[in-house]
Image (cartoon, rainbow, N blue to C red; front, side, top):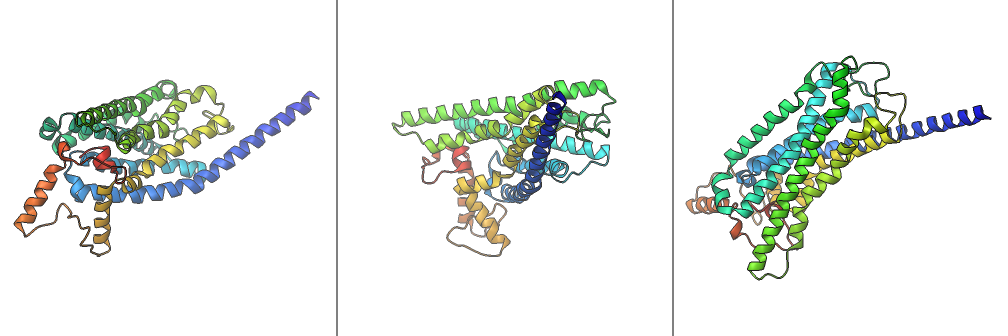
Amino acid sequence: MNRTNLSSSIESVVLLKNKLEQSSHYIYAILFPLIFILGIVGNLFSSVIFCITKLNHISCGIYFLLLAIYDSLALIAGLHHCLTIGYQFSALSGAYCRARNFLLYMSMDMTSWMIVAISVDRYLKARHPIKARMYATRKLSIFISCCLNIIFILKNFHLLTIFIGNFTEDAADNCDPNPHYRMYSFFFSNIWPWIDFTTYALLPFIIVTISNTFIIHDQYNRRFKLRKRTLDLSLIRLLLVSSISLIVCNLPITILAIIYPYISISYKTNKIYDNVAFAFDMLRLPAYISLGLNFYLYYYTSALFRKQAIVLFQRLFHTEDNTNRIQLAHRLFTDGNQRAETHNSFNNFDDFQSLPVPSLKDSCFISNFYPI
């Protein structure tokens, strides 16, 4: 009797393992390629728009440009999960694992902190518009971006060492730590998740939330002094987009990464695939989705970004629209008046005081969410 119950329980566990594995295989084999293609195409267009149009002249344009670039790099590094989970691909060398791990962690860190930089930049423009116009320049943006790059290269450098690469027979992932280095394996399993959680999710979420809260408070006071009774709900909603997307898409996977070694029997082995391992694989997808949808979010919510994108498409397909033409940043003007007007319009980007009150009818992710 006991043997019968034991055998039936083992069969049920094996059946559950097979169902969960098959589900994750199909999801990653079908869904991830769609996320990857849409994300790479969208981020490519975002990079071009923030590189050659008027949006290149705003102080946080560098941050948006780097955000699109690092989003693409993170998606490329994430192909490893698509290949290993969806198509049963096995890594062939430790060098591949080291390069892939470093690229993924580095890119994800930079995408998170680009959102932080954009939020702080917009807060300074809203709170101290005169001083911000003097100090929050493109040169400062480039300097801050370089500093962040150096910091995260140092943070993730250990991923490029020989400590990475597990090619034992029952390895859960060949890009896990090398089991021959026990101290590093302990560090990677018990300490590194806390470091990554703090730098990638916790600190950015706190800073972005505080910055957006101050911006909302400043907007409320500004409207109260001007005797405006209605607070623009679309502005508040857009101000919270970055914070909400950060916590919804990225915080769960980083929290689970901390407790995963303690609650999953699938950790460090490919013999067993339990519910926790399935949840861990599924929670990766929202993080990858957040990397691929920025262009479409900008296009849908931002009139300014949408106009610049239309101009780019017109130039790519050699079409013209005289009614909605917005000059690209590098275009040469022969008329002196046109040159002066364009120069003044660039200067007005950073003049928060002169912006019209945004409306629910025509909300703008870049010009309203982050007042330009």
